[in-house]
Length: 171
Image (cartoon, rainbow, N blue to C red; front, side, top):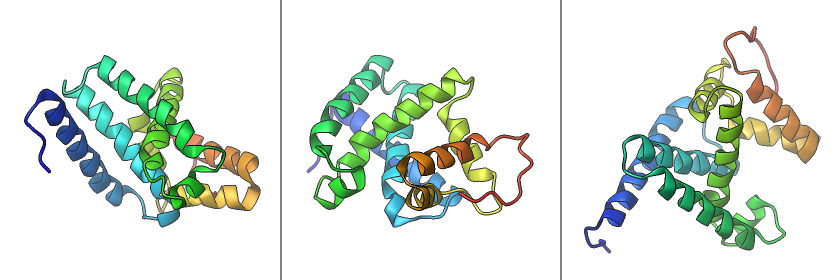
């Protein structure tokens, strides 16, 4: 059903257009892996907020409110189960709510290091002969466990910079 034309409705449609445009870019940047869909959706959702801010469709205050609402929605929907299990249990909104919160955390860390999440996404997907994917990150977690595998995946992303010598770099 179409929404009445309001500023909120225009903002909503613009964000969704930006979200889907990010997927088009992402499909060129990395290979799809169903088990990693949450990261694709999370990145697209967060990118739509950044584009909305940069094009003055959403204010910083509106984005802050959006992320705060996502934080408040994430925990009750997750409960005590892992994100992937919550999606299988019918909580697919967690792809967006929990995911956008995670992307904000990564962006804040990147900004503290003197860059931003756009650079993280770009360098992450462009440093390997075959792009580094969320499936690679998940493979590391499965192989080494959450703490060690998550650390290895995070370190792998950290090696995505122009001065890294490259070559074979397993997850």
